[in-house]
Image (cartoon, rainbow, N blue to C red; front, side, top):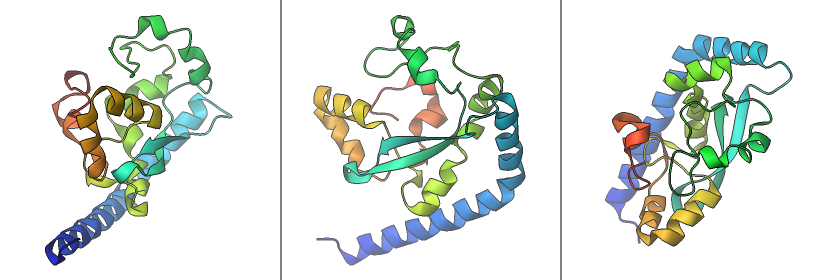
Length: 176
């Protein structure tokens, strides 16, 4: 049973998400357009927006938006790079990943690639602050290996969280 205070909290938080993401989209629209054009020029024929299935609150799946930072055939090339993975577990990380485009290096370093997720916030898939959403196969593996990881799925996923503040390479799956 959800009490009145909880409903008020979530209504205020949702209103805050809508207001702040709307303002950010308007204020950042020139940057978003320049980034879109730069990606399109760097990789003609490929969509500048990358979508990927992610797991949100209570395990709900949603389509997350990002600016594309990798070559269009990045998933096929991943198979040949797996032995160079710098992380343990289900996540692939490689500091000098050859699949990342020229524009992709810059927009990843500056986190501009994450800005299309402001649309996810407007849609209600994400909140501004919360644990970062994982891909379904990674979330399933984490939940299997570390059942307490499932606690993360009780919160609404966010555009920014602990990993973005503390550092992407200095966190565990619990911290994201």
